[in-house]
Structures are given as structure tokens and as C-alpha cells.
Length: 212
Image 1: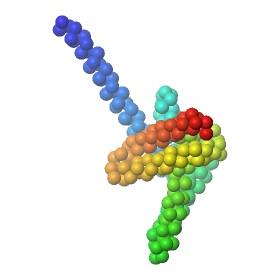
Image 2: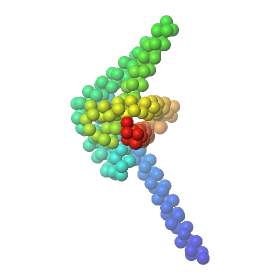
Image 3: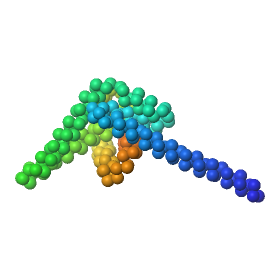
Image 4: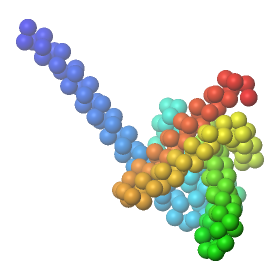
């Protein structure tokens, strides 16, 4: 009887060790992907290339494609560098313009004008961030050209407005979490991409189901 107990306990211990090993592997993979993304963003004009690579690698993992992280990241990162550098500049300038609008609204002495300018800035921020957060997971899942991805993002945004708003709020929440607890930066990229991909997949599935 004692032998039987040991025989059943051994697989349980083995499966527990395998689960811990799997969790640690996923954690270090998340750290590696996030650090690659951060390093890729350092030159500033490579923000678009690095972020697209981040989402592509996370999407590959979600679908069971487990190529080496560095290889998969670099393969996506090096595509169309000039076009993506231009895209990085456009997005960063748009975000800077939105921030400047909000700051300008805060400095106005007329309460009505201050509210209107700040509201315009916030609407612009939601529009820019919403488009970005909708386009990135769609690009990772379906591929295609940038214009095609933007058209699909607009279609998803119009069909599922709340999805775009939630994606924007999740992006802000991840940024705030990193600001409050800097060590979270080690996994922030992976967490952000996973959340947006899951949200986007749900929105696309519901749109397909309703035929919109």
C-alpha cells in the first residue's frame, strides 16, 4: 500500500515541478520580449518597428509559434525601416501636439475656453491612442499593408467603440502601473500586448458573429 501511495505522489510532484518550470519559462520569456521592445524603442524613430515586432512575437506565441524570441523579434523589427521611422515620427508628433493642446488649455484663464481646449486635446488623445491600440493587434494577427490595417482598425473602432476606449484605458493603466512601480517595466510590454491582442480578438469575433 505504501508503494501505491508513493507511485501516485511521484507524478503529482512531477507535474507540480513541470508547472513551476513552465511558469518560470513564461516569465523569463515575457521579460526578454519586454526588454527587447524597450531597447528597440531607444533610438526613438524605431518605436513603430519595435512595437510592431513586440506584437508580432506575442501573437506568434499565442498561436503556438515558438521560434526563438530574438530571431522572431529581429525578423519583424528590420522590415521597412524607413517607412516605419516615418510612422514613428508622425505618431510621436501627433501625441506631442495633443499634449501641447491639453497643456495650453490648462494655462488659459477663461474657464469656458480652457474646458473646450482641454476637451479637444483629450478627444485627440483618445483618437490617436485608440487608432494605435486598435491597429497594432490587428496588424499582428492579419498582417497586410499599413493602409489596410488602418482601414480595418477604423472598421473595428466604429463597430466596437467601447473596445477602442477600453484599449486606450488599458494602455494608460499599464503606463501608470509602470510609473508607480518601475520594476513592472520588465514585463510591461508583454502584458500590454497580450491584453490588447485578447481584446482585439474578442472584438473581431463579435463583429464577425453579428455580421457587422
